[in-house]
Length: 123
Image (cartoon, rainbow, N blue to C red; front, side):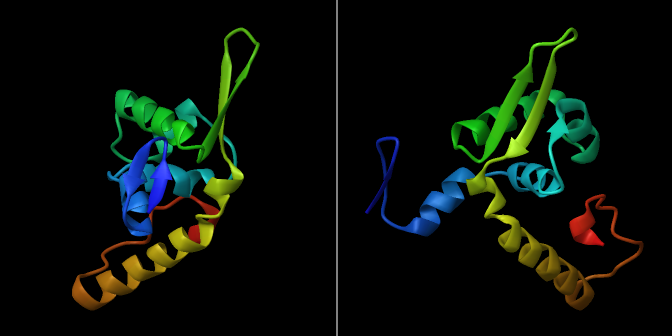
């Protein structure tokens, strides 16, 4: 058995699925692999996410200790998001998911343009 914050899991895969249970979190982490980012930059980079959803997902990832939020005492306030060591360990997993996605599309779909991902991991 596995326990996280008084929640019981029977399988380690269930822990992973519980954390990454939506379409946004892995994309946020993918873009933070390239380096620290401010909210506005993340909002512009993560396609089709609303500000409200991004705020919620960032809080959830921070609670799970996957990202770190640093607030600088400036006017206007400056907030920077970065990956924790736990979050950085997702890099090989996400790189493999990226490669698998390309091969899947090549095998089962159609590629019509260059990859629009703006991180150096995609180049």
